[in-house]
View 1 (cartoon, rainbow, N blue to C red):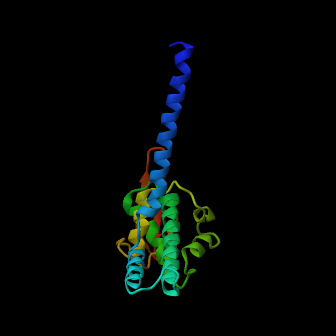
View 2: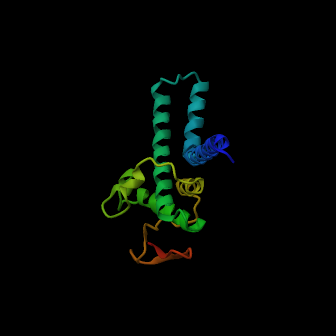
Length: 189
């Protein structure tokens, strides 16, 4: 290949790489908006029913439903980020258990009652999970959705998850060995 052909070849290769990166980023980022909780679906249906009754989008009733929908989206986003950060490379059941621990804490009187506050509580999770990052997989969003919808199969009293035993008893122990990384996580009551 002479110099005359190398530059167009390099430009073409770089363009292809750029396009593939854009597709990969869009696919991951769109996971946040392709997965919805049952509550979000119900809020949307309620808003559509009100619109059918003549309510306008600027009415207090529709605005309240929209605000609740976005609050639920924030909860879904945060729980999915926790799953990605804590168990992104783990088996599905481990991801479900991590999601359910966060949701159980939101619902427990022992912890704050929002995902944001649960994650930000001292010595619990990292506040990095509160930031918007687009590397959260659709599978992590699905684990978060299942937990928020009450379909994870994990008991609602499991509020501890760590590499050591906490609480009063172990519900499940997950051992992950990827070949280059090995860990044991205890999910406890």
